[in-house]
Image (cartoon, rainbow, N blue to C red; front, top):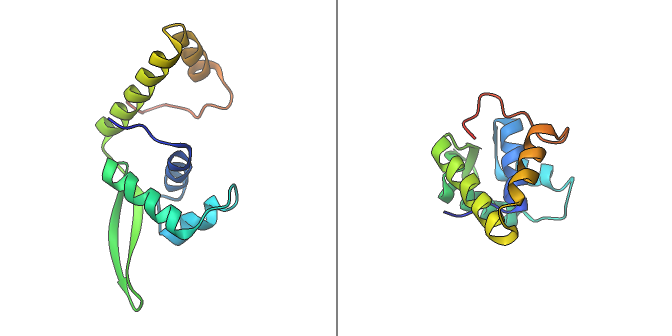
Length: 119
């Protein structure tokens, strides 16, 4: 299973807060933090869709088809990605990384609440 990169995480965070968005909407939001192009966000959303982390619905308009993206609903995919990320960290830093991860998740003021999630 694949992991996600920093840009993918930023895009997922935007999708979570907006509930649904077009590539243009997300590009504008991401540009507040970093310099990106529309095509970079389109590619990122396509990858997230392929991974099952984003869903898309085609919208037909005068300019052709564009997609409205929402956050993926498959919790199993999210769990697999978290497990793959943890495995990668443990392989890189050894089992002592467990305590650092636990402390970060449980006690950091910067960690979003995980209530109600399987992750």
